Length: 119
Image (cartoon, rainbow, N blue to C red):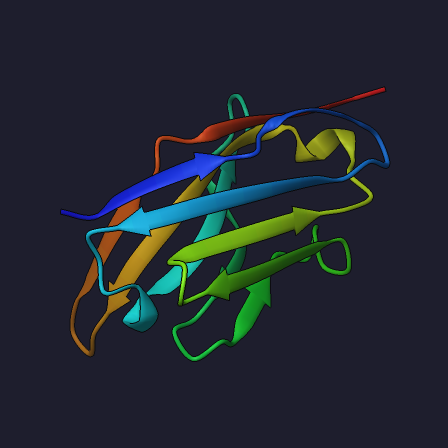
């Protein structure tokens, strides 16, 4: 049973930094693609950043140059470093683990952690 536990959310001022971490258990972590999604009130969940099992990263245009995703396969963790934060970064952030195969995909989600950016 895959379990994802996020930590590091909270309140931060505009222009500040915050680091989110996600610890995975019960999974073959090194072969999974990992990602962070976020969902603001009244909005759809959107991809923020992703890192494949091979280490390739991908970012939403809105966070490029400000956020960095990284993974540690030895510790089964994925981290999202968020810098120069903006009001619009306020959302619940979700950790995602995905096993991507040729014809199927299995997704697992964390419980979410609130990030609030204020003046």
